[in-house]
Image 1 (tube, helix red, strand yellow):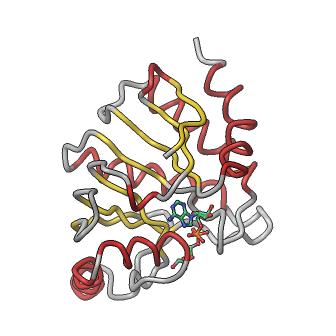
Image 2: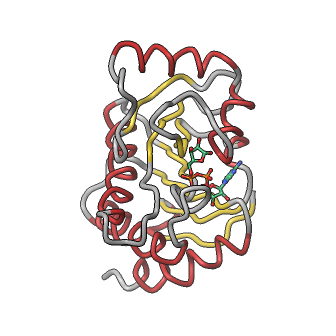
Image 3: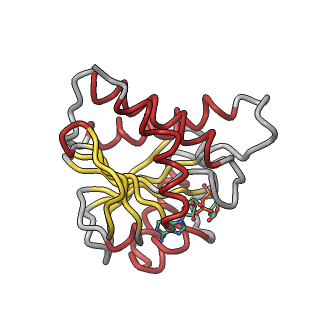
Length: 188
Ligand code: APR
């Protein structure tokens, strides 16, 4: 894992690497409403975490979200074989051009995941770049939204001690930092 940027005294880090390799309290999965796995980071988490994660997702679908997990919401399962103790599954918006409320749903996905982690009394949380892969959300626009909400979070009395933004490629991390660093370091 390579660190490309650190903010708020190291409480927020921007890194490149494989999210599934991290030893954190919880990983955030960029899932779909079905919660039954998929490609991208969803596929990687289920492959690395093993069948127990899918079993817990099926139980969540059966008992709490029979029609699927709505975009912007988050649920938590165990981490299975992952080093992470938990996986917080959230559904980001599918990009439809930007006038269908995608920005707000993206922010909701991050905020719901943070709330899930806080509700469990966790300390460290790692995010992938939700919706910027298969779901097609523009990476620079997502960076500005995420930077704004993370700045508000860390300046607003955070309960989590560490949030790690993990990008699969250095190029993606650079796009994020280009947009986010001015917002994050512009803080008092
Ligand atoms: N570690 C870190 N980041 C990763 C990894 C990984 N192992 N694998 C993929 N990524 C990155 C992608 O490069 C992208 O920047 O995660 C970001 C999110 O991409 P996706 O995984 O495609 O997620 P998303 O765009 O939210 O689309 C969700 O894709 O995988 C399916 O089941 C999932 O239907 C859902 C949809």
